[in-house]
Image (tube, helix red, strand yellow):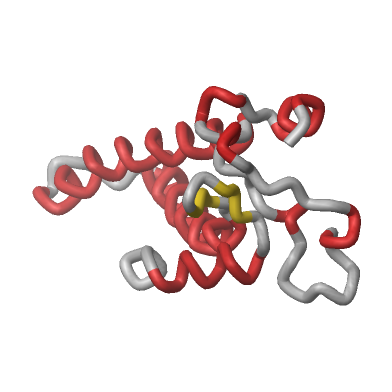
Length: 130
């Protein structure tokens, strides 16, 4: 892949993409006859958007790791603010399940960005646990 493409996607060559990352051409964008190849919907595994999303996910996990045991032990009061935060966290995790169908991944050093492949990989791996 070219450095211009890598910069456009927010990736860096030092993260393993220099070993043959797949670069979609214009024939494999959404809206053509190639069903399941909407690569512009899939987050590149080394993009800054993906990194930011993963950081937000870690923050929500930390919140859950603290609040679930405290709620179970009866150590928290269900104030309106806590209830709203809990609702927001629940919505986030629901959206996260849907978003995981559109997360690119590496296969033998090649970036996979096809929707069918990302959805299939997610269903075969974490979907049941999520």
